[in-house]
Image (tube, rainbow, N blue to C red):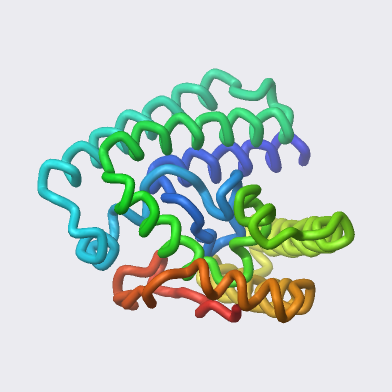
Amino acid sequence: MKKVFLFGIAATLVAAASVSYAQGGGGQGRGGFGQRGGMGGGQQLNRKDVQADLKLTADQIKQIEAINTAGREEMQAAFQGGGGGGDREAMMAQFQAFQKKQQEKIDKVLTPEQSKRLKQIGWQLAGNRAVMNDVDLQKALALSDAQKASIKSLQEKQQAANQAIQEKVRNGEIEREQSGELRDKNNKILDEELGKVLTDSQKATLKGMLGEPFKADPNEAQGGRRIPPTV
């Protein structure tokens, strides 16, 4: 069972790399990994609404696509070769290192203003979940050790809940489409609980960091579903 579970983790990470997540995401629409509240890289930059907001040129889009393609192939090769030695924490660490390298490449393609705006868009799409893994954001909000512990506990509970859903899919107890809906419900609950951890002052600070509202196209959201921010 452990071997199957670890394979599922590796498959998830490779899939994440194939659609790479740009700063903040939350993308974490599915619960996410990494240091920036999302799954690292450039998924958001694949979205036409994000491209339009950032005013990306055709050349920038082409360069980002090349970075994502090379990154996907690198991740697939790493995990096919037993990346992380089959250890979940080692795989996560390896993936986070990969994220950082991918983001550095993408930042070289973007202007400083575009990188800043991309981070704001990621925070807006992630909602309260942006505070889970973004170290810079946690520092800006001056989260206490108690708050960080509460956030970690909530994240672990969500991961356990999503793993239970994945297990039910493997056992044939529910269909994959049902699993997506259940994970979205878990994300919504997590958003709400994270909102209770933040103080009113911190919520105000976070809102002030989000920049102009991002006009998201529902058709561009991952999987056709997106939980609205609850900050």
